[in-house]
Amino acid sequence: MAARWRARRAPELLAWSASLIAYAVASGALAWGAAAGWDVRAFRVYYLFGGLLTAPLLGAGSLLLWGRGWAAPIALAYSGLAAGVAIAVPVHGAFSAADIPAAQDHLDFVPARLLAVVGNSLGTAAVLLVAAATFRRRPVGNALIVGGVALAALGTALAGLGEAQTAAFAAAAVVCLYFGFIARR
Image 1: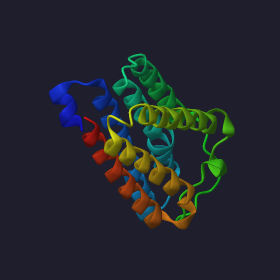
Image 2: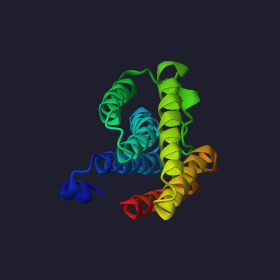
Image 3: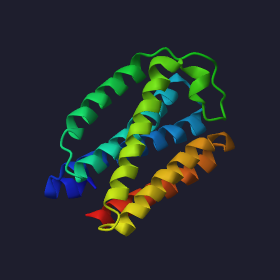
Image 4: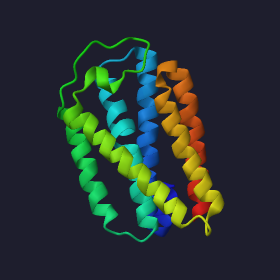
């Protein structure tokens, strides 16, 4: 995706590349926590890249594809805010060595979890809105992207099943997202 952006300089490709990179880093943090045991460092990386950045950047890419150039500066400002919050917010509670940490067990609702709810809701809404509006022109790509978003959300919802099951959903989601992106352009 990044190579496509370098070749064409289409802003949606940059946003989608950033979203896929964020998702990959979150998956790496999942592996880190599973292999070495969860701690504050692994949790912050997992929360920033998975909980705060992936869906909003995906939504920004969809809006940019749709010609909404205002999405780029908003996504950049949001990303900076998300990074600041993820770095500075107090993390409390003990971590289990084997379970994916639930945000509600370690973060106060304001600002970290509220930011995640707003960012993920708006990012997902943007993806669904643009997919619906452009479905006739790109049915396969849009179906794959919506399926990838649904798989990612389902994997997050079922995170209590463990790291292996969550990783399987993450892998399936990223495959759908990637092929949806390349089918759209």
